Amino acid sequence: MDWVEAVATLRAEGVAHVLVTVIEVRGHAPRDAGTKMVVSGASTWGSIGGGNMEITAVERARGMLAQRAEGPEVVEFGLTEHASTEHGRQCCGGQVRGLLEPIGVRPTVAVFGLGHVGHELARIVSRLDVALHLVDSRATILTPEQRADLQGGSASVRFHHPPAPESVLAGDLLPEDAHVLVLTHDHAEDIAICDAALRRPLGSIGLIGSRAKWARFRVRLHAAGHDDAALERITCPIGVGDITGKQPAVIAVSVAADLLRTLQKAST
Image 1 (cartoon, rainbow, N blue to C red):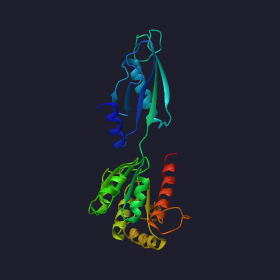
Image 2: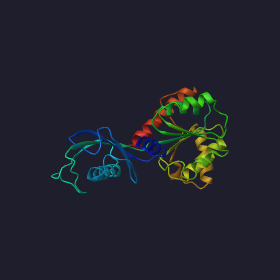
Image 3: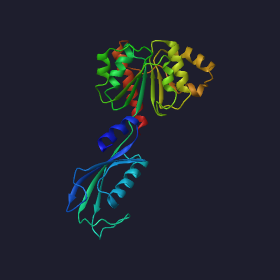
Image 4: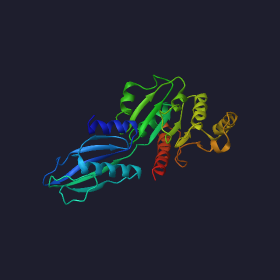
């Protein structure tokens, strides 16, 4: 797998990594400017020339990953017998500058329910740099054209149509910091998804509906074994309170705006 494939694979799998690029070469060096490699916490792909230079770049990249660094760094390597090194000398005679760019894990958002509001919300969120899971028990809820539109944005999009939507919350399909939004066509599905969501760590849980709906849900979720502290993890109603209107697009914009605030808080 080359560095291009590695970046695509790591992004799809939600693995943080660093792209290392040789940006300047003065004199002789093992590789030319523009050469790239990718470093994750466990593996590397490609090579910028081996030896002390590469080992040092890999160590620094993994240090950046451990520190969750967000900004790039420029590093310099002297390839002479007089240069200070930790992992052996390279005597090519040149000077190399490298750019280390951390590429963090995209947040994961799962939208349960692709009816009028869910579809409008999915359209907005699919334009964000997120890993987006779209879940609906109805396999034919979207037309081929709608699916293509949802896959045309910045998000990586996966569709799921299990008979029991709450099953998507089992296993490791969604990471522990995923943000879940529940907007299905069926209150029985809503309550099952909320119950499953409360039984595992998640970044946030939002449920569409009125305060009256949430009051009924609280009683049923209490009966399922969830205490008051657990129920505080669910936000209902969802959206920005002062954006009013019942049109699907208006509700979707309100929910998306509130989701953006949640994502920004989670990243700080």
